[in-house]
Length: 116
Image 1 (cartoon, rainbow, N blue to C red):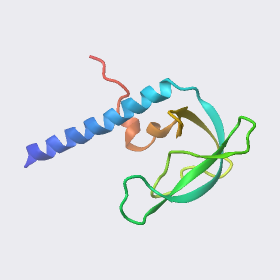
Image 2 (cartoon, helix red, strand yellow):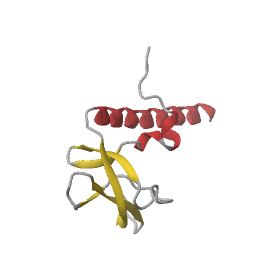
Image 3 (cartoon, rainbow, N blue to C red):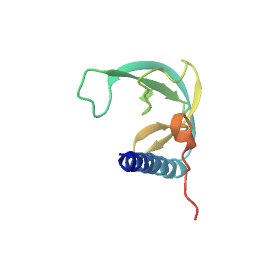
Image 4 (cartoon, helix red, strand yellow):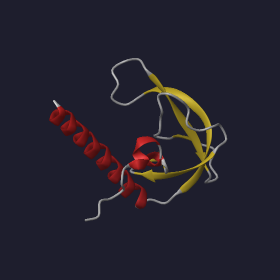
């Protein structure tokens, strides 16, 4: 019983750690941009088969355009940013990501790399 629980915890840790390392590689290969949160729109989240809507922030990037762009960062329990907040974002493969995504919650305690 205890070995099964330990195995599941280690597996979960490795999955979370791998997603953080992948994100940090994407972020390090990109240029940071400043954006302003303009509004939230409720949209269906990825890989959901129910009718739950998540509040996705839409931002205006400070590049002299008035176009709103969807930020790939949604939280099911709250709106992580206030309207008119200035945040740092980056582009990767045509998707706009929040720069500090893995600096919050449980992810901030995971290492960005392992040194032997």
